[in-house]
Image (cartoon, rainbow, N blue to C red; front, side, top):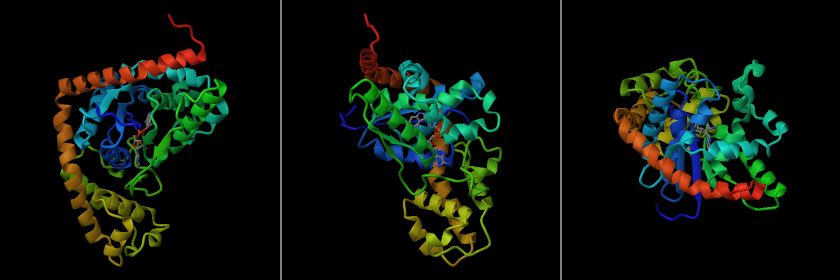
Length: 336
Ligand code: TYM
C-alpha cells in the first residue's frame, strides 16, 4: 500500500440492501478519497447484530456490501476492505471505551432513540453502546478522517469526546481527534416517498429507496414515481425551501451528475417535473446501472469476495494490533 500520512476509516452495516443514500452519502466519496488517503473500509457485522439478524442472510449481506464497495470503484489492492468480526480488536477496544464514555453521553444519541423507539426497555444493550463500538472502529486504526453521511455526525462527535477523555484520563495524546468528512451535494438523501424522512434500508416501502440491487427498469420506475409537488421547479435552490421532495431530487441530480444543485435549478427552473424526472431517471440508470450489474456479478463470486475480506482482515490486524497493545499498556494491563 502507498505510504499516506492521513488515514480514513469508514463502515457500512450489512443489514439490508445498500441504498442510493449509502452510495451518495458515503461510498461514492470513498472512491475519490482512496486516491489521497490510506483507506480502510469495513463491513460492520458486529454493529448489524445489535438488531437480530438471520445468520445466513447476514453472511450474504456481508458479501453483498463488500461487492457493492468494489463495484462502486473501491480498489481492494489499494485499500483495506474487511469485515469487522474478523478483527477482534474492535470488540476489545469497544469494551475499554464502554468504561470511558459516560451514560449521559449515550443517552443523548438520537439514533438510539429513533431505533429503540417506545420500546426502549426491550432494545439490546448492544444498540445502546453501539456508538462506543463505532469510536473503537475508528480509533483502533488512529484514523484521522472519517467520511460519512450527515446522519453519523453525532456519533463522530462522541468519538471525539471519547478520544479526548481517554487522553485526559491517562495523561496522553495517544488518540487523534478525528475529523468528519461530510462531502458532496447529497449528504442526507431523503425517502422518495417522503422528503422529511431519511432514505433508509429499513423503510417498509420499497418505492422509498433505490437499492444497489435494483435493475435499470426498477431504478427508472422509482424515480418516475418519486413524490413531487404541483408547483413548477424553482430557479434557485433557496426557492425550493419548504419543498423537501423537490429539494431532495435536486440534490440527487446534482450528486449523480457531479454538478451544483444551483445550476440544475437554473436549468430546469420554471418547468414542471416531467422533463426533469425523465432526465434524472436516465442519469440514475446510466450511473447506477453499471454498478448494480457489476455488484450482481461479484455476488456470485463468493470465494473471491471471501478472499478479499480475509486478506483485508489480515492487513487490518497488522495495523491495529500494535495500537491495541499500546492501549493495554497505557491503561495498565499486564502483558507477557
Ligand atoms: P450505515 O450502515 O447506516 O450507513 C453507511 C453510510 O451511509 C451513509 N448513509 C447516508 N448518507 C446520506 N443519505 C442517506 N439517506 C444515508 N443513509 C446512510 C451513512 O452516513 C454512513 O456513512 N454506524 C454506521 C456504520 C459505522 C461506521 C463506523 C461509519 C460503524 N462504524 C466507523 C464510520 C466509521 C452506520 O450505521 O452506517
